[in-house]
View (cartoon, rainbow, N blue to C red):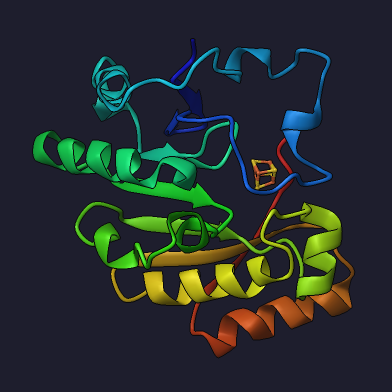
Length: 198
Ligand code: SF4
């Protein structure tokens, strides 16, 4: 079972394969086995996650990233527990890559709980409006998901040093990209235009 893995200089953490989206471009839809090692036969316990991180030489990495092969905030309580324990033994920065549905999943505003535990939150925006988001990402929350992720990102900014909204380069037309920039700027959030990782 692969709980931690390396991407560039980061140590990535795989806590769940569950997700509240079913994006058309998701690597989970690749069925040729390319990403097979990241399928979890069962979800690791919070202690197993923490021990897997500690088994690594943390000085080799620039950050720990809860990312997974699913949506890490499906297990927000466990992610925050691991982050808190990690902060007790290391000053390595901790990031969550997320679809931004944490508050919708938990049914409460979890953003105050990020304080002191999480250093960066990167929220996938993917598109500039709720209608297209539903078409591309197929969220279980329907159109509510889009406003929900924007609201989450805005609130997280009060408690986390760095919050980003992200879109994938070339995945949307330039006109939509401008809309995304405006959505981010209106909320005083940085927009990251990232490369698609194959
Ligand atoms: S939000 Fe991420 S993990 Fe979930 S379906 Fe979309 S790309 Fe896959």
